[in-house]
Image (spheres, helix red, strand yellow):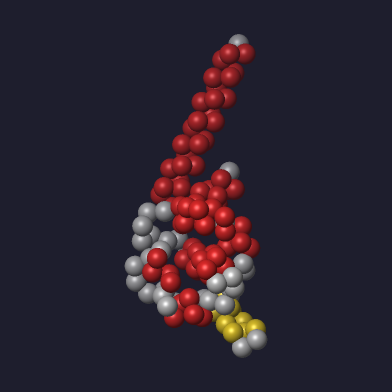
Length: 117
């Protein structure tokens, strides 16, 4: 009986990991971004490359094209010290910074999928 319970637990764990992997793969299909994903990715990229959240130059250089084909309208928030910042909070971009550094969009998406479980 104990062996049967272990098999069920292992089967559930493997199924959960496959499900998470499947969602991660679906959420990272090239060119298909969901909601505000591109804006959070640009924020993460800016933190890594420039160490700031001033995204005006990132949108001028069209850094978002690394993640999507086509134009993206910036989501501007408020001015601080004469610079424009995103209207999105920086919590998610900071949270996914390490996975984004090592695996790009796939790493960031995988962490978000794992956290959603």
